[in-house]
Image (cartoon, rainbow, N blue to C red; front, side, top):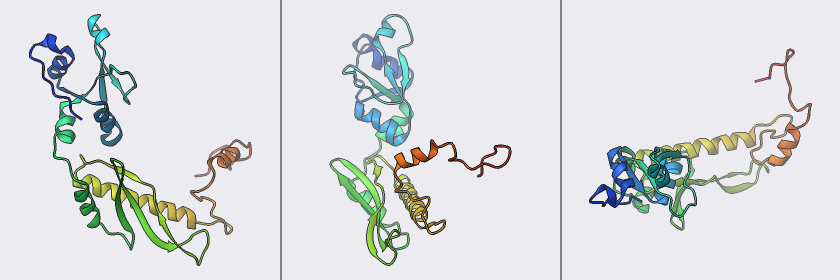
Length: 209
């Protein structure tokens, strides 16, 4: 994901030379996506045309674009912390998940292609059909081989919290109906929200919390 800075003179690669001068590291498009989507860090793009005109060649972007000549950079601190560390193997991530317990739920780590994900799986009662048993699974949470152990554990915690909220939303009922059912059709919710009488307010127009 890191692109080695290998110029000898500034004129060999002015972008990398300037990046070193301000503490930045060039990365591949994959590295830029990882920085934004997984680490949550800013990325910088290099504009050769701006440099040639004597303008600031750096601009911050929130996602890599599709330009074939695009060049992306991250701060040296981010590169040292998340990219130069040893990658964890799939088996190491599985071993971390195996040490996590909550009720009788399974903290499953799988992979689809090159992507690694964490997912809550469990056997229990079907909330929509009381008395019937079912096996259910939560949403997939993307993991990275560049995560540290604490990040994997924290992701599992967030997955459990999300699954718990899902269960509560299915089991909470008003007049016998799960009014906060997480499986509600979003288009139907939109239709309801667009009705003039969709909101209940107190006198004076204050919204009910």
